Length: 100
Image (cartoon, rainbow, N blue to C red):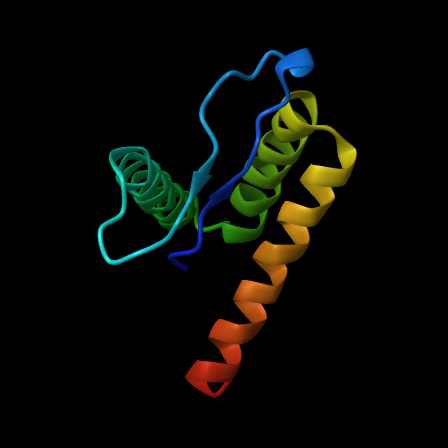
């Protein structure tokens, strides 16, 4: 749905030790490329499951529940809520661009 990936400062006290990743410059680093590939594959799988079951809302709710709960465990409430808010803003911008 978009190309923006923010994985800033995993908190060591929450078990994260991955390096901070920011998209910048014309050449994304390998970690960003890996994140984009994973994101794209997951979106393709979710689209496929939605089509097979003919129930995109249930698939979206299940994926959102898993993602938000897991992200909360890894990043905490504030970062999770901020990420989800950015996702919604990105979807709104995409709709505006597409003229919906």
